[in-house]
Length: 289
Image (cartoon, rainbow, N blue to C red; front, side):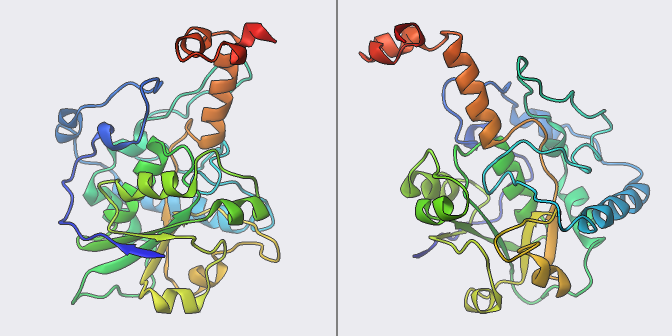
């Protein structure tokens, strides 16, 4: 099912209100004024050189199984997530301490995103129409990492139509595990992102040339690390070989699996017991076991 949703070009700032977060979101809210005041990025040429080397190193590890923020949200360590921020990487997650989202990817300006993307291009994008970019994933427990990845994809060029594929629960279960949210919930979370123009529901786990041609896709956006699937060392190999792959940079410290771990830790410590009693489900309290 392919649902189109056309909108005007987004503003050059990101709104924390569109992250799909619930009332217990652990992240500090960021106002739009924080982004309007952002300085321009400096030393971009040196950053490009460093990022190219990091991207090459990532590609050389194609046999390594890598989990993705958009596919199942497992915690990753990214070689490039802090490059534009000028801040050191966040401390690694321990089993007793929550690691929250690094804000560096939210600081990327449209200009810095486009400069980064341009440095990887080996083919010319179309100039007489909007550039159609495809991003895909599970998008379970839609969070700020998802939103910032879609923002990078949308702002990769000045005029972009962003198409997002959302894999069904059945497809996810056959490859990984069943999502927490239903197909409808995940698709609607993505569809209501300010950055998204089209949503393709029941998207394939592995895309092929026929899929790209059918949906008139110019480029595919995903983080640069190889994504392993059955029979594939990297499901994006053929897109990369064509020069139609746009690497996006991950947001450290936030993922679906990380959120699940946070919830379980808080549940085990009894932090949800009052809420469970309030909604008349005391049997679910941690103290009732």
